[in-house]
Amino acid sequence: MLKSINFFIVVVAIVVLRLIGMAYVPLTDTSEPRYAEIARLMVTGNDWITLWFEPGTPFWGKPPLAFWLEALSFKMLGINEFAVRLPSLLATLATLWLLWRFALQQSSRRVAQSAVLIYLTTALVFLSSGAVLTDPFLTLGVTWSLTAFCLAVAEPRWYWRYGFFLGLAIGLLAKGPLALVLVFAPITVWAFLYRSGIALQHLRALPWLKGSLLTLLISLPWYVAAELKTPGFLNYFIVGEHFMRFIDPGWGGDMYGTAHKNVKGAIWGHWVIAAFPWGFLAIVLLLGHLFSTAGRSMLRSAIVRPVNAYLLLWALFTPVFFTPAGNVLWTYILPSLPAFALLLAMALEPAFSKNRFIRIVSLLLIWLVPLVSMGFLIEIARNPHSIKSEKSLVEFVR
Image (cartoon, rainbow, N blue to C red):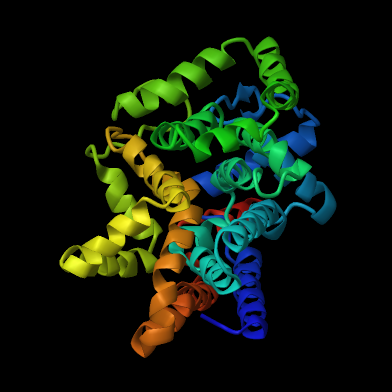
């Protein structure tokens, strides 16, 4: 898509644009100020076990990893928007590195560059990379585990062999048992499909006993400590957040707001928005192949390749899993987007050398989300009351 030097410049420029937004845009909507306040209370109260929704009210809705890192950032950089958002950007950059390594090992340098640019400029990735959310940390954990599982055979280094289990620990401390589902479900299906050959090599490449003990050693102590300090946490978090929230669209047990009522299958609408603008290009390419005999043949040949099947399962499992759920947010799509970016990069690679129009369109799409976001930033600077934020009220009270 781009020459190496241009690739580096573009990535740096996009990250700089995001850094500017992180510093100048007030905390918006409900999640950002809520999570930032939890991190602030962690610092001021010096309580690193129980998350506090407000003094006297524990927050049982999420594990602590994101809040730990945000609280540490507050300690180092002060209480401000940039500090609390920085850990999400660092988690996104780490995910980009994993995507880069996966693409390099399985394809080519040019495909790796394209995958990184597609992922970084997808709407949800670009926005969440500088937002106070837990999803970038879940995505980092899931991506590390699924990348490590695939790369540990060809590169049996510690950060792949044990990285699989470190990724699980990150996911458990970022979002909870959902991380186990998002990692093991696509692996299980893929291993069943290729059970007579390559799957056994990948399964044998990992130190399952020592690795599982490592995951438990890192993640389990906090869960035990949190339950002992505020009894009832495990019941609310495991049963409520991981079952009732998804089974019941109008779940009334939410202690910190109201459940999101969506029709079943709404996750696919969220996918279209989250994957913008690259999702539309992917749909156009897919339809073009489906309506062509040669295209369908190419798709069949591509899907049967083990690595493509693995990426496809990774990319599709998250939206498929949430299809029956009525209580969903667009951020749930995030863990599936690294695989989507790599699949699309591999699909576009043949076209770059043959189709100048595709190259031009792709270069334009790279800048669409960052430049629209910059326009949004300029509008906020001119009209601070144009977004949902209580910053002016807080400053007035102070």
